[in-house]
Length: 254
View (tube, helix red, strand yellow):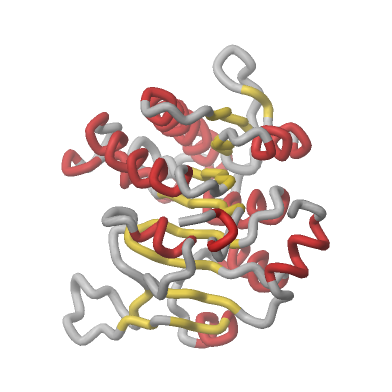
């Protein structure tokens, strides 16, 4: 597929930390990370500029630690550090597969990655590097969903893709409710009214207020690449927003 035929030319992909654990449930499974990176590589070969945000739930989840009695800020900082571990694992595997990357962390740790600076991240994207945004926003009380929405806005992404273990948004949990209905397309207002829990409230407000489409799809099986090509895969959550041509002209990118 030619780059000019792509529906989206710059995207942010949000991956859950649990996706990197594979069947073992926790930690990082190298064979699973390899599969994830192969899916991302198929997208990169299409000529797409890509930023990544990866959760840390396979190692530590701040909210769960807080519920168990830890101070919420301390638990959230631990969760942020977990996302750095995942970012380094994905970086290592992507580069082994031949794709240049940069990990940019919202918490400074210059020995292992660069600090997140928006202009630097934009420069990396323009050079064809995958920008992996780690350590959340650098602040407690914000989820990696919110980080994905925020970084997507900052890095001028045309869509945010949330890659999950299911193939879209359902009326209820399809693993528990066989009568659950899959939605092919929703408006932002519908997603809010139906209380579908697509993203947390802060993240959802960001994508809705900035009119950036959100695509929820299955991580494996080539679905991320298909979504970027504009095929009807997963669930598209969108509302009125300027045409891509107008967005590109406004951003001065293409």
